[in-house]
Image (cartoon, rainbow, N blue to C red; front, side, top):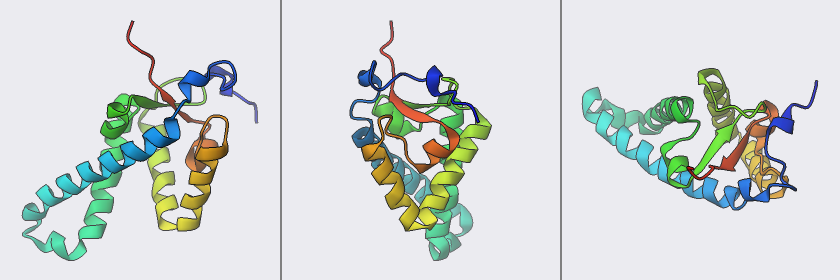
Length: 149
């Protein structure tokens, strides 16, 4: 397996791309969770209110769809956009639908197995590129967006 991360900003030479990204990801996660909650609450009446009986599952499904769609469209969720961070693939490109799906699936598995989520958080706080478990598996990173020129 070859290392193609040379397409990504070097954390030693360009630390500004990774500055405060872990904290920004946390805030983005909170914002995204609130958006998912609101969307889920808006969906409940369309389920004849039976969605209240399986609301956590409804939120998980809405959250999965929300993350895949927003990441595939802009390489970031709305919360990430608000925090001015975005995902980049190992080749430096923005996420496509396949990578957005794979990353969201990895996040979902991490939520299902809390020990994986803890490992992911520790990795984000200790790795030079701030990569979580899904990021390491996929070779992706979350970086600060470049300022518009």
